[in-house]
Length: 363
Image (cartoon, rainbow, N blue to C red; front, top):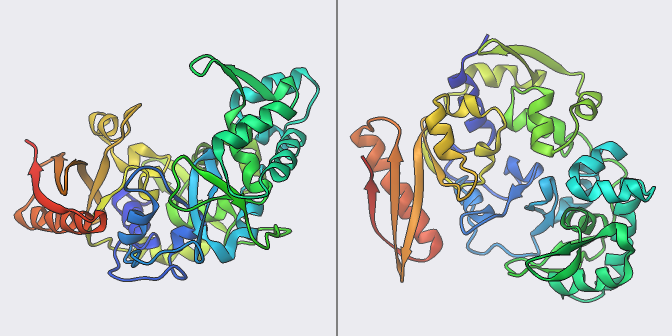
């Protein structure tokens, strides 16, 4: 039996949130992918783990639409294994991942995996040079048949369904050009998908290694995959632990780390940092009001991590060349914690290239 603090300390250590320096090569979260959403996305997640991102370039990293259709950052050298890792486990899994696009495909007698292959082949043919996403979508809509298309009322136009479009891109050997908005798609130079991802990039194992202990449902929710498929790919080399009365699994090699991790340190986690992506939200924030504040339907804040525990939420407010960080603590913070949080806010401001005008600790 382990308590939530042991679980959180383990994750802090596994995700290297307790280190001062690191490199792309030794940063563990790049194995599962670092979500690159918002101004405090992948670059800030790496900076919070001690990586110098000032000279980060697309010769070292690559952005792909992968898990849940979101853009994720990876090491460029790993792209073949990554694309193999994010492949749906089955046709049913592919159908779940593409959401409402599966219904018209089924009605037309088109398998979900076959549909992703068709979209990927068409995208590959279109993107011979760097092409803006909207142009790719428009040209796809002109060549794909009706089951692949939907009418968009706000645009008053017909588009390809969004999730097949996103999930087919990596399948087609296409990346998102770093730093582009709207995104520009281009071919991955020398792309070759691996036959299998290998243990390091296997997403079930990676989740357990970085966000464990966990259940198949936690992993399935993270991937938007059916629980049945995740169970079929569950590792054999796991041990069972009990967390708050719930049986969960942990990779056997991580048993000692679970027992010994202490999770020291303070970090301002971005809204989509991997630490906050764990699907056992009641473990991260047992108080329902705190959970509601941390994961609203729209406009997520970041999380304040102090010594292995989430102690509040934070939001930035930028004005010209200055920035204020507003912290909403969930309980009274010590002077030492406030000082450490302010130091992290200074780090964030420097990362953004602005000056910190202050930290507002809301009552």
